[in-house]
Image 1 (cartoon, each protein chain N blue to C red):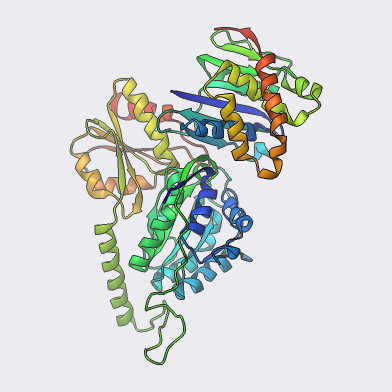
Image 2: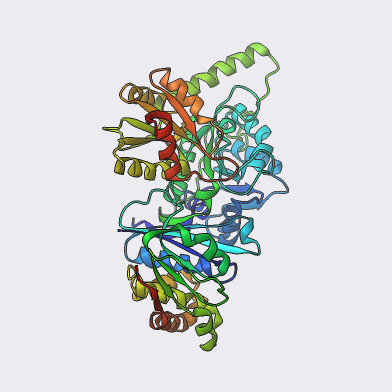
Length: 183
Length: 356
C-alpha cells in the first residue's frame, strides 16, 4: 500500500503541521512515511504545500508530481494541483473562498467546509484538524486513535491540554465531509 | 540498548545524531536550507547534558577555523553550511586536509552558482570530490539518501575521520535536509576523554611537542608529505568504497545516482520495469572514494548507463572514467533547484538508448 498525498493552501493554515500529524499517525501504525515541504520563496507570504507519502514499503522518491489524494485549501492550490491528481484519485477541498470549483470527472471529489465549521466551533486554529478528519473518513488508511497518538507525539507537552479540542475537530470533520462527485 | 524512533527532518537528524555521537563542538553560521542544524543544537543546548559546545560564529570562515583549532586538539568537531557558505570555508578545509586533521563538514546543497537559489541541487560534486580548496587533497565524501542516513553518517564520518586523520564531508541537499522521515536514533555515547597522541593537548615533560601545521617551506619535505597524503588516499580508496545496488542483477540499463537523485531513480526503476525496460540503480554512498570498480564490472553486462544528478553533469565524469569506454554513458539532470522527476528520467533513458 502506498498513498501519495499533496496538501496545499495558504501559509498559516496549518498545511505543514497537518502533514506532520498525518505522518506521525502513520508512524504509529508502523508504516514508512516521508514529509517533504515546500520551503521556497512561495512559502514566504503565499501558498504552502507538503507532500506526504505513506507506505507499507520503503519509499522511493519523496518528490513526485502525481498524487493519489489532493487536500486543497485555496483557489491558487486548486488551480495548481487539480490536474496533478491521478485518474481514480481523490480530491478533498474546502469551499471557503473558492470561485472556480473542481471540474474533473475521472477523480472522486469531496468537500469539507472546515473553515466555516472551525469558526462555528469557535476554534479557528483547529481548522486543519477538521480537514484531516474529513480525510480519514474518505481515505481510512490512518485511524483516528493513531491521529490522537500522533498529536501527542508531535505536540510539545505544554499543548497536550488542547488535544481534546483537536479530537472534537477531527470527529466533526468526519461528520461534515460530503461527496461532490464519485469517479 | 533500544534505539529510539522519531520523525525528523534530515537537518534535525544530523544535529541530534551529533549530540548522541559524543561530538565535542559544533561551529556554524545560518544559511537556508540547513539552518535547522544550528537551530536544533541551540535549542537542545547539549552544553548542559554532554558538555558539547554549540557556537554561532561570526561567519562561515570563522566557523571552519574554529573547527581547525578544535580538531588540532584531537576533539570531535564539526560545522555545517549550504553551498555559498561551503565555498567560503574552502581555505580552512584545505588547511585542515593539509594538517591531516579529522573533522566533519556538512553541505546541504542548494542551487548555484553564486547565491543561486535555496532549492535542492547537486551541483557541488566537483567542489566536494575534486578539491574545492587549493592543493592535492581529498575529503572523504559521504552522500546520504535518507534521513536515517543523515543520522547514521555522523558517527561513521567521525570514525573515518579519526581512522585516517582526514576531514569528512557529508554531501546532502535541500530535499534531504528539509524532508521528514522515520529515524532510529542510537543511544547517547559519552564524549571522548582520551585523545590521539598527535593532538595538541598540552605538552608533558616526557614527550616531544606536537606541531599541527600545513606549512613546510622545504619543497623536498613538502613533496614527501604529498606522497604520504596520496598513499593515504590510495588506502582510503582501497578500504572505504561504499555503494548500494537496487535491482541490478538482471538490469539491461543502469542508473547511477546519489542522494535525492538516487531516491528519484529508485522510482524510475519501478516505472521503467512496468514498461518492460529492465533498469537498475547503483547508488554511490561514498563519492570519494568512488565505486569505480563495481561500475566497471556492471558496464560489461549492460546496454547503457544514465548518470542522474541535479547538475549539468559532474558525477558523470567519474562514471565515464570508471566505465572506460565499455558502454555508452549519458547524463540527465535538472538544474538551479529543480528536482528531476522519476518520469522524466525514464523518458530520457528511452530517448537516449531505446529510441522512443
